[in-house]
Image (tube, rainbow, N blue to C red):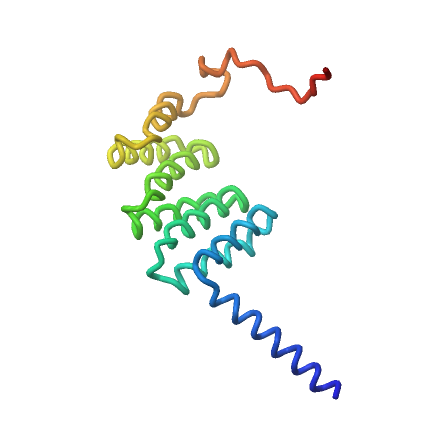
Length: 170
């Protein structure tokens, strides 16, 4: 009798794992986001990667690719992997809303995480060439204007009041 219970438990485990592989694309994205918010980055990647694998024609593939790159950059600090993933997104899904965001992020990572101003400038210039009217174009121009500058060398940021954590008592 004990052996049958063990076999049933194993079978249920297999069914649960198999069921996760067959989740709809939107559920995979939602689960990935939840895990990402919980700081479970490797687990989140597994769910995001299932979208293009299990649903290659899904309109959510670009979004999944975008989240993979964000997790690589922000969660795992794997900046070169993130740049490559963003590049893949641009190549595979050039007509989605995520392509310009990915191009921006490539420049941002090179400028702020890798400290490679040459690559950052190249990525930002490519953004302006491809997406001159995009809502991020002004941000890209600002980034280019102050590329390589210390935060204390940027006039717009010099007169800002420091943030305070004090709570005002009434």
